[in-house]
Image 1 (tube, rainbow, N blue to C red):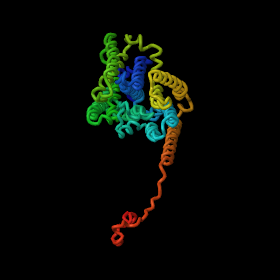
Image 2 (cartoon, rainbow, N blue to C red):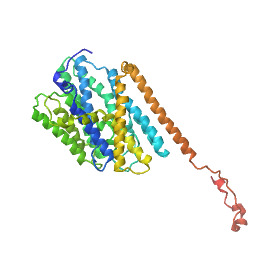
Image 3 (cartoon, rainbow, N blue to C red):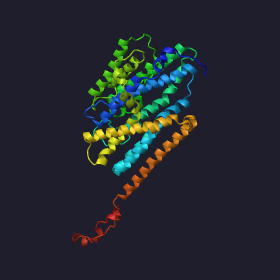
Image 4 (tube, one colour):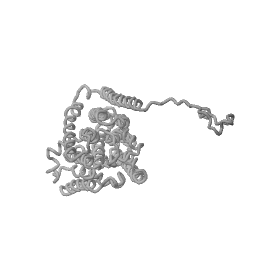
Length: 436
């Protein structure tokens, strides 16, 4: 491809700040809402909107990186892009899948092994959201026997986005004319805007007609990624002063918390309701795209908030398997104290996974130095998870067969005809074996 450049203003979201503490704070808030919702669903019924915050952030960051590469080189190297995503996300995800499968075998009664093993397979292949959609799972139901890896549905949506999005942007860039930065940018905005409009329309329609499926499927969530992408693509032509930037930031955080506090298990979602947390996240990112000091920095730049943002991915991975298996390990329902202890354990595991899995995977030169080695080792890791799940399915089948009562061989006995028919033996009814 010939090299061209996109206008610099559209890259400002990615370049004005080397590190966006406001985005890290958004991650911390998002994971906090999700975990509290899962631990205390009746206290924070709308905490699930944290997932939508993550989707908007992903759309913004990935689009910023991709358009920066298009601006500098006029092309996208898809192999290295996918390899970076793999190194960032899959090591921790595969480790937790193996850990969750082990916890299932140790803690859960074996009749539940099969469903969990199949969902581990779906999660390892990043199609868990479609599996749950086909099963018509009600994600917000408090009495459903959820699997230990059900939360991987959102990771599946993200991976599908990472797979498709670079191709879409590259196609729009080429069709827009690579020699004109204005036409290229306009083409990118048009493509992303079209995806957003179509996806939002589908989200509203399917949330009303098929809510169980609408919650999980990718095409009802794509508009949330597109919303973040548009922030990266559309330049802010009017310089924001501190008042406007702070109004956007504080207003955005308020919208996210309002959604978490006011929504619940009966709220039709995603649909129109998802606009509140999505636009709130967009507002925070926009407000932080300037050099103006934010009033929320007093809180959001604090060490504990930034640390929680650091471990947010691993905390998301670990918290749900612990919630599912702990009642079986304790042989009792979760109390406030046990939930608090579970939260502490999840934070500890998240810190350990971040330190000894996530970070080393990004720094291991043998792995990071070759795209081919990255894909080969990742395929081996996925194969290990799939084999472990297949072994659990095999053991489940064997135990199920062993627990079946033995089948008794049936031998039909021909009894003597009743007295009333002894004089008419020729007309006596035939034995049952003959009638079968």
